[in-house]
Each structure stands twice: as C-alpha cells, then as structure tokens.
Length: 129
Ligand code: HEM
Image (cartoon, rainbow, N blue to C red; front, side, top):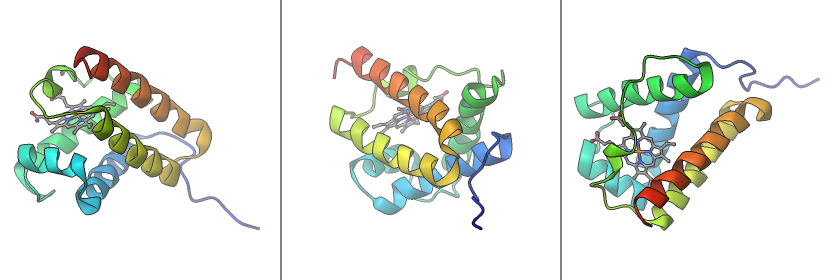
C-alpha cells in the first residue's frame, strides 16, 4: 500500500513551507522571473528583504487558504513598477503550479491554483499586458 505524503489539510505551517519552496525554486531555476526578484530583493533568500517577503506572502496565502485576516497589504501596488510581461506571468504560473502539485492533494491545490490564476489575470489587465 502506498501512502500519500501530500498535505490534506491547509495550515499556516504548510503555507509557509509552500512559500519558501516556491521562491527557492524561482531562484534555483534562474529564469526571467528570478531576474525581477533578484533586482528587487537580492539573490540570497536568507537576507532581510527576502525574509520579510516570505512573511508577507505567508500571510497573503493564509488569507486565501485559511480566511486569515493578518494580511493588510495591496498586492497590485507592489507590481506597478516591476518589469513584467505576459511571458513572465506564464513562467511564474508554471512554477507555482508545480510547487502546489508537489505539496498539496489536488482538492486543496486547486484552491491556490484557481486564486493565483484569477489574481494574475487581474494584474495583467491592470498592467495592460
Ligand atoms: C511575473 C510574475 C510576478 C513577479 C515577477 C512578481 C514579483 C514580485 C516582487 C518583486 C514583489 C516584491 C515587491 C516589493 O517588495 O516591493 C512582489 C510582491 C508581491 N507579490 Fe508578486 N510577482 C509576480 C506575480 C504575482 C502573483 C501572480 C501574485 C498572486 C497570486 C503575487 C503576489 C504578490 C504579493 C501578495 C506581494 C506582496 C505585496 C505586499 O507588499 O503586500 N505576485 N511580487
């Protein structure tokens, strides 16, 4: 018999794991998305900028996955001055989906994937991409 090691509940701890896994992957794959992050936050995920980003993004995804109310930011505003494109959003989405599929059972993963797609569509529309 095989046992799945994927998460079948959403917790703050596994959202934090997901966020760290995602940005570690972005930096490791070192594509166009990584360039944007490196210019803004640096190339060392342990530096203060990255650690702050990880805390913020953990709160952001806890708002989505757990209806937590700690996130108080404005996601759109953070993206207005970045050199973004539809291709970069596509690259972001592929990596995000891969991380979600690795960590979560499909019925939970779909929650994050659907929201990410909707938010990315809104971003692209607002950025006129
Ligand atoms: C090509 C795609 C993307 C790139 C390159 C990107 C890059 C960035 C960067 C560099 C920051 C930090 C900005 C700063 O600290 O000043 C940021 C913040 C953020 N991003 Fe993205 N992003 C992308 C797509 C997305 C998507 C699709 C989502 C949501 C599903 C998202 C959610 C957020 C959130 C919540 C923040 C924090 C905003 C705040 O400070 O409250 N990003 N992003």
